[in-house]
Image (cartoon, rainbow, N blue to C red):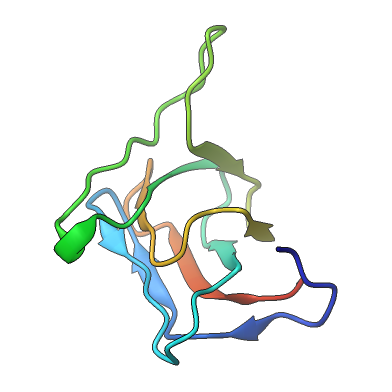
Length: 110
């Protein structure tokens, strides 16, 4: 469900790089969205995968889309801040560029 209030963080901000990172809330409420900040001056791809039972490590992909499509990959604009809803709670994220993204779980819009 999307909210039309100001973005409210539900947990810490995570630095996401080319290794998978699980972005978890810490208030016992599942996030309905994620705020993603691109720290670079170039486009950065971000991929995500849902949380697995037992919090097993998941490795999403962050590759360039093809004509056939790539599931669970978005492109973040240079130096951009974007909020996305519909990504599963406590998801795993990976960036296509090293130390390029900050991701915060929460709800609302930017």
